[in-house]
Length: 288
Image 1 (spheres, rainbow, N blue to C red):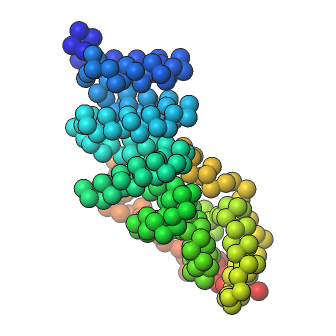
Image 2 (image 1 turned 90 degrees about the vertical axis):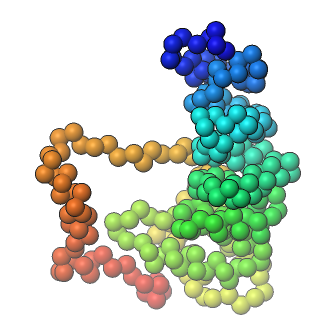
C-alpha cells in the first residue's frame, strides 16, 4: 500500500466511489479485504461507500463481514463508528435470518458492555429485527433504552411488541401521550396504517374489557389526519436527514451576542397573554 500513496492524498475513497459508480460490489469487497492493500482503504469514508454499495445490492451478510474487519482494524482509531453500526443493524434487519438476528443481538450486548449508545435509528433496526424473529420481549427491551420514546418509529415498534405480548391495555398511554403533547406549532404526530390495523384487529379479537378511550382515540387519529399510508419499513429505511444548522453569513455580531445569551430563546418562548388560549389543544375529554 505504501507504493500507492501520493504524499498526503488519500485515494481509498476515490477508488471506492469509482467502484460504486461502476456498480461492482464484488471487486470493491475483494480489494477491501486484500492484504496487499492493507491501509489503503483504512478510512471510514471508504468503508461507508463500500457498505452502502453492498447494502443497496442486497449483500447484507457481506456488510456484517466488512464491519468485523473495520472493528479489527480500528479504522481511524475507533472500533465502533456510529454510522457503521447503524448500517450493520440495517443490513441485519433486511437479511432477517436467525443468523443475522444472533449477530445483531451479540453486537447489541457488546455495545452495552462498552457503554456505547447506538443511534436511535440503529436501535429501531435492532428492535424491528427482534419483532420479525418473533422476539417481542427483546424488542420491547431494546426500545426501552431510548430515553424519549415518542419518536415515530420507536413508539410504533413498542406498540407492535406490546400487541405481540397480548398487552393491549398497555398501548393506551402511548396514544394518549401523542394526543396530549401536540400543538399547532408542532409537527403532526402520525402512525402507520398497518400498525393501526393490527391494533384494531387485536381489539376485535380480545375478550378482555378495554378502556373506551382506546376506540375513541383511534377514531380521532383517523379523522384528524394522524394516520398515514407510509409503511413502518419505509420509515425505518428513510435516509438520515442532516440536522446541521448553517450560520447566516449576514447575521450581525450583535445578533450573535444576543443569541449566545439566550435572548432569542426567551423571545421564542414568549406568548402574549391574550393569545395563549389559542395554543391550548382540546383534551381527550372533549373528543366525544
